[in-house]
Image (cartoon, rainbow, N blue to C red; front, side, top):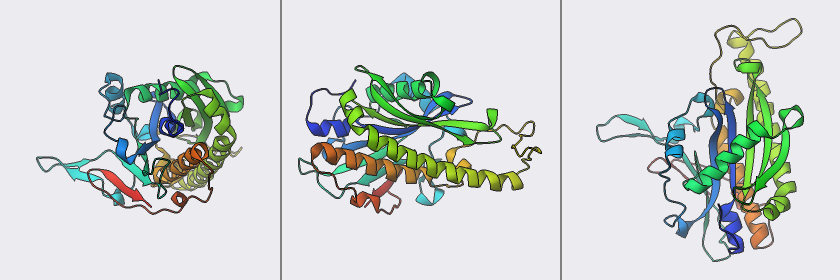
Length: 294
């Protein structure tokens, strides 16, 4: 599934960080993923758009709950040949200001799915397994699983309150996918700590947003204090709406890019935790791509 026994920098290139959601309409779904891609590698095998029927079908099976969106202010709306406005698929990119071991620059790119069919399949398996198969106390927390064929994953499953969802909760999973068990084991502490901090931030914003929405959107409470859902109000809602942050995926991309940068430098050499990619700004790019974060 991944390149085996390659140079140490291959470990960074083969890592995938992503977000998955158990959608009420589509089941376990990949929301978006982030990969490390060298600037001079974009045209080589494995990074060309997938022609997989499964990937193409999944791309057309999206609702508000599992959509990957960015703020309208980023200007991703374009026009087709007939002048009709269309929304380009979001692509977020961070360029690490430091050169890699070979002297080139490394891009950290976020998009809905990996462009490689093999990597899409591996991430899809980790998405389904983390949200549907692995048993966790309270259905939340970190877990590691995998096999030599599909790779090894560290997943942090968590729930967010949503009175308009089935069971009044929506389930998500942060995923870190590695090429081998040794890489996953070595990264376990760093990844689980970073994932836990990110989950706590998302949960905190979701609690605040839920409290505010319960008083403005007709969501009442029982005497016990539990939120109750009115009949007919079950609707798909995505992470931006649940957290009240329309740029939540941009923030997550920045976190994933920083994590990939740290892990890459750990394997290539000494890591500096105050990497420049943690201090970043973002602006609109061309052809539906969000500009460099520098």
